[in-house]
Length: 169
Image (cartoon, rainbow, N blue to C red):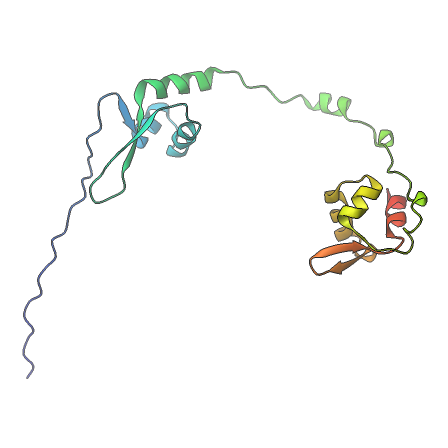
């Protein structure tokens, strides 16, 4: 028969101080959120802007608690909510200000480049030649794989592909 082992010593469990002492005139994050009827993420965003003074209180056994100055916090939130935000323009205004497609400036002619029919061009080189953005050329390369060769992770336009691309525009 086996002898029972002696009882193990129990470790003392340290209770974390759940109610840290918050000085008068300061909010915890949860109190600040409740006072403005928003969630704690909003309080964090306001604090991240640096508009409200913050401090940290050591909380034994857990993370420190962030506290916010009550008056400055409420004052900032009042300013924030009372400041008028610019409204988006009505849909009619967007249509009226949009340029018609025909008024776009066409890319420069590639016929002036003598070796465009014989050379492979990387996206930055093609951008410098055509005047089109690198992002546009990369999207064009992905949409028209017949115009490019993939060199590792990079696209290279085939000889004559830039002429075909300018014809597509």
